Image (cartoon, rainbow, N blue to C red; front, top):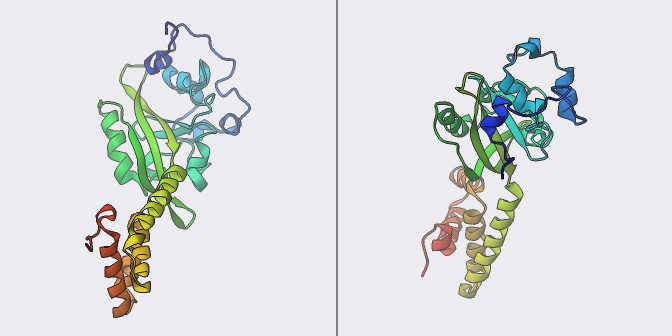
Length: 254
């Protein structure tokens, strides 16, 4: 389309009308940003912000604040957090302390995975695309198993160099868990024909649940098996893995 706008165009702010207010809007994040004393953050006072940063936040089209899709703008070498209302639930209880905070601090528990991808784009590499990535996000005192599809795209600064990254993201936890349940039911139905005793039924059920429920449950049950289970329990465990068969990653009993 002739009027299509690229990330580079937006960062340059060319041929587009300005808004009255950088943080114009009625959402929670717009209000929070208006109330923030930016001079006390690592981003510094708004008057000193580069035009490319202001543009991406909403001076022109409201790329981040005006979007109904979860969007996060990481700015500067430390990838300081600026995000819209739709992104806020992804942060769990990290919000509002996450605003203008470095990415490596906000996402410390997953930075061993996310960090190298972001740093690759910062160094001039291509934009990334990751689908249904499993991440264990800290929420309170718990580590929550989550899945996300996301992309990191470079955003040019006023000097033409990479000034930040635009992270568009969608949480897919519900989708992945639903697909997992469907696979589990399919496996159970497929293996039910081999059941000839109560013991076999136990092994089929347990093996399918362990191998289809995901790594966290496998690790948890393995730890319990190693520490507290009786020899009989351990035998049933191994029987379950054999009954789970090739599709679950175990050894086929046939």
